[in-house]
Length: 310
Ligand code: ASP
Image (cartoon, rainbow, N blue to C red; front, side, top):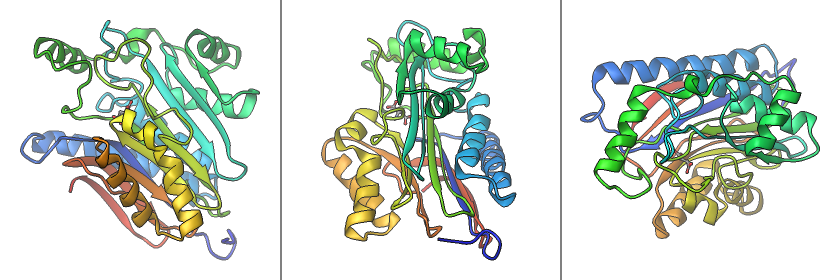
């Protein structure tokens, strides 16, 4: 446990999705554009932590920046479903008492992470979906937008490509772009948040790991905070985010060891992706099994990083 007045120790890590991007497929301009947004999102969270704010506020601020930016598959710039709509999923968790909020299949909420937070703080439930989640959003004054806000030409092109190449329902080989953040605040508390449009061409109300507490998102002050990205079905089947926290809490594995062990397990059932982890001692880890993962971190020791490739 750290003391805010004598030891303002804090840490933040963010991701903008794991995927197949390499320095050959992403040109210098695209690299610079993505890195600028990653830095801005991380710094929005960092500003909260430096000012002594909470980990929950820091992850909300960082994820909202990425949701508003069309480069990432969350909020504006979310991928399209098979039927040409944008259906958004998000979750947030506070490591103090393991309070959590999540939403799935929302279509009008500008920042799904803020709706997940309202669910966590103002509602009796943990997980709301579809029309009910939107009604909750309206009742609680969470900003609503016309669905056109989320749509971008590039994501439409990706849907057309997926359909024309008959890639199947999911774009497992295309880059992902889900976003997430984990943070440790100066009071020693951790939090995690994840937000996504899911997978291009998803059907049948498909929901991935991102909004599922324990799969794509988890935070527990006794272990750490985790946000995942990758092939959601395998992350669900391994209970990835909770499994990483359980390993840290019960086996004494470091954040990096626990994260790599769970990614390896995901690999054995055919999944790929990445995770970001922060612990109550300020350790961060950002391993991934895809060619790249959009990511950034900073902490009170002066460590700073923005990266895309391995
Ligand atoms: N995990 C997300 C999902 O399955 C996708 C991603 O991380 O890009 O919905």
